[in-house]
Length: 178
Image (cartoon, rainbow, N blue to C red; front, side, top):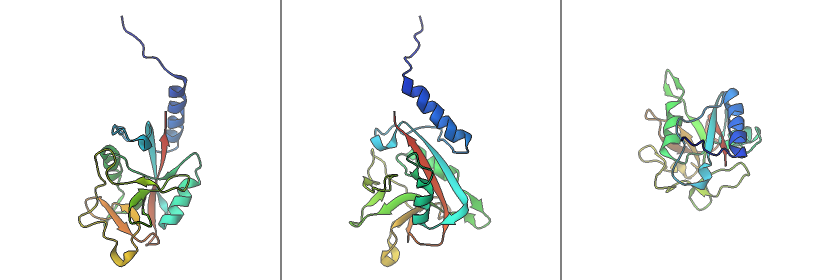
């Protein structure tokens, strides 16, 4: 006899909410983090904005303007990192960089910005994996490279640069918890 798994009411609600985002152009990684990191949630969708370029602070505000807990993209496992890299936007000069939600705090730690404005989720050593920085990065060149971008170099790794650097596109994310 086959057993039907018990469906809890929030499973259907979560799936319909995820579907709303997917229907409006957001993208979902093919696999979800299984690192056990509670910040990863139970599902995530991403949206790339390249039509308007922003500095990092404007990108934070643009993502938060969606409401519903949307923030600049954070990465909690290799699957998410690989997914964002696979969606790199390329031009004749190579990949086009885009802002992510990583920033350096006043103590020099790399943290993720959250939708509530807090920056207290450490980036390194989350569930046994690390951000794939470009060789020699982050280097805080000039003493003011406090924000993270993806796709700066040909291998689509992460780079640090000033938060007010030349405007670029950005990734937003919406995480679901349940």
